[in-house]
Image (cartoon, rainbow, N blue to C red; front, side, top):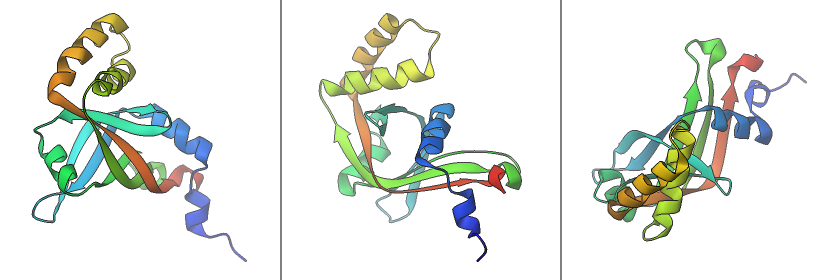
Length: 150
C-alpha cells in the first residue's frame, strides 16, 4: 500500500519544535465581532511548551478573544511549493493580565531582540506590561507540513 502523501509531509514533534524556534513571526487568527477571521502578525515566544505573545489590552485581538477564546496560529516559510513548511496550531487563548504579563512580555522580547541586554528589555517589558495583555495558546490540534520531504 502506498504511503499517504499527508503522512509523508507531516513533521514529527521534534521537527515542529525546531521549526517553531527558527521562526520569528506568528500569524494569529481570531474571530471578529462580524464572524470573519481577524488576522495579525506578531512576535512570539515559547514558554513552558506553549506559544505566547502580548499585545495592547485595548487591541481588537484581545476584544475578540474576550468574546470567543478560539484561536488559530500559523508559523510558516518557503517561497516555492517544494519549499513550503508550516505549523498551524488550533487552540484556546488564555488571557493573562497583571504581574505575569511582564514575565511573558520579557520572554517575547528576549527571543526577538537578542542583541539588547536583558536588563534593558526587562525595564521596557515592565513599562509595556501596564497596558498589555499576554496570550498563552493552549493547543487543541496541531497540523504541520514540510514539502521539502517530497
